[in-house]
Length: 143
Picture 1 (cartoon, rainbow, N blue to C red):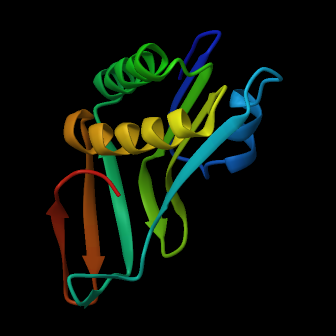
Picture 2 (picture 1 turned 30 degrees about the horizontal axis):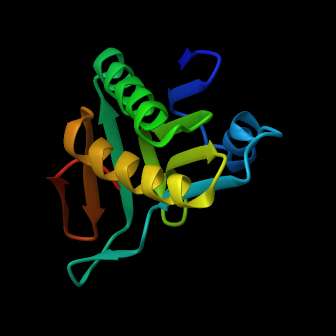
C-alpha cells in the first residue's frame, strides 16, 4: 500500500471498500467527488463469464498507479486521489477497481476519473483472466 497525504494507492486480495475511498478523498474545500467503480460483469463478447482472476506485479503496479494519481493532482488540481485494485479470484458483481477523486469543481473530477481508469488499463501491470464454463483466457489487463 502506498499512502501519502493526498494519495491513497492499494492493491489487495480482500474486498474493496467504496466508503474507504470516499472518506479518504472527502475534504471541506472540494465541491466535487467522483467515484468510478469497476465490477465483474456476467458476460463478455457474448460469452457467459463465471468469474475473473487478477494478478499483479505489485511494486510496479503501485508505482504506476501513484504516477497516475500525481498526474491527476497536477493536471486537474485535484485535492485527493484514491485508487484501489483487487487481485485474486472475484465473482460476478464483486468490485475489481475503485477510483475516487476530489477537486473544487465537478468537471475536474469527471475528467480525472476517466483519465485514471483509461491510463490504468494501459500502463499498470495488472492482468485479468476470464473464466468461462468451457475454459479460461487471459485478456488485456484490467476491468
